[in-house]
Length: 109
Image 1 (cartoon, rainbow, N blue to C red):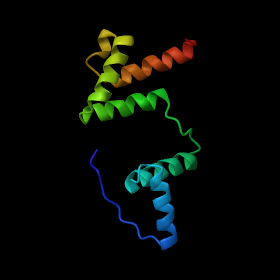
Image 2: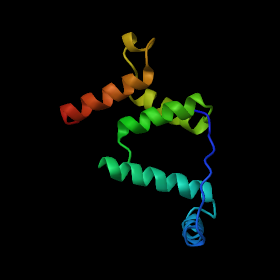
Image 3: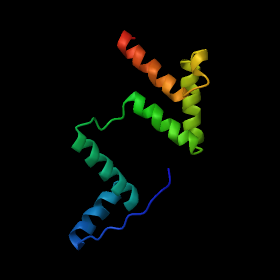
Image 4: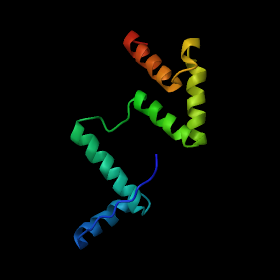
């Protein structure tokens, strides 16, 4: 996933609000804007602001493919807990974990 740049014109009032918001994110305006966009888009779709397990696994998969060692370790831990069946090993391993988690929830475990 390549990063892209967005430029936005802000009034002085809006800029002060952005600076205040950025203070909650260590003074990082980019991080504050990303968080605000995610929060607004989640609210607009009526979704929970907290990621579900399936979305978390898929996000970890994306981060692992981008080289995140932490994400790779988390996924390996999930694979140890819920090893994919032999038929799934050649396919989408993240999908196999998601399928497993859905079956567990369905079975009430």
